Every structure is written in structure tokens, then in C-alpha cells.
Image (cartoon, one colour):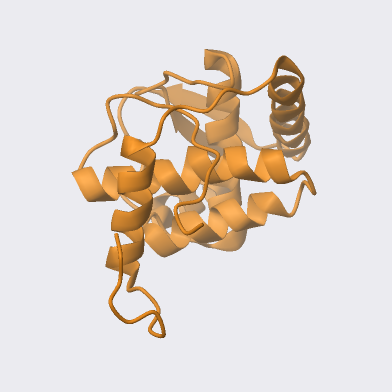
Length: 171
């Protein structure tokens, strides 16, 4: 997507379209076994830390929360996070690791008090960035959270194929 006036920032809708089209049309990037291991270790470390706080995980089919407030309430009242097992077709992680990633991601929504919308996904992802200085792990997070969220919002449903896209459409 090209803009006529480079001095004006893109609207959120235009950014969503830019990221979604980039994610949907870009070739899948390959990740070395070493980087996959580092990503798994990051996820597992955060997962373990959250579980050690006494937050329970309940796996469910379907989407357990209609909005972020339901998640916040569940964590505060029941000290649990319900994790959907839907669309669990990971690229970097195995199925178990991907469900752990969802648990961590939803806990980040809770900590950041971020909604289940475009701005909330950005906030939760950037919060997760604070746990690593690795540029490649941040790119994987961007693909797994921001690009997939953009594709979902753009398409109106979760993309059929999940993949890792490490490039940035702005450059």
C-alpha cells in the first residue's frame, strides 16, 4: 500500500491493511532450530513464572471471553485464564508451546489492561517485547501477534494458514 502524502501518518485501518496484506502475501520465513529453541525457552520461562504466581490455566474450545473485561474479571476473581484450543496450528512452537504462548499473551493483556482490539494487541505485544532484547525473537512476536491480528481484523476471521513473516512492510 502506497500513500500519496508521506508526511501524514497512516490511519489505524490503513496500518491494519498494510500489515495484513504483507502477512498474507509474503513468503514464509525460515527460522533456525537455535532460534526456535530460544523462542520456546522464552515462552516456557514466562509461562512458568506466571503459573508460579498461582494463575491457573483452563483449556477450552471456542473463545472463552467476549471481551477483555471478562478476562480481567476471571483472573481477579478466579485466578485463572481460559485458553482456547481453536486454530492451534503453530509454526515456531509445538501445539503445547503454542497454548502456553496464548496463556502468556492473555496474561499480558491482563497486566497491561489492554483490550481485544488493534490497539490492545499492539500493547500486549510491546509489553512482551520488554522480556527480550533479541531482535529476532521480537520479530517472531510481531508476526505471531501483530501480523496475525491484522490479518484477522482485515479478513474478519482467523487466517487459514499460519506462518512466520520476519520482514517489515514499511521497509
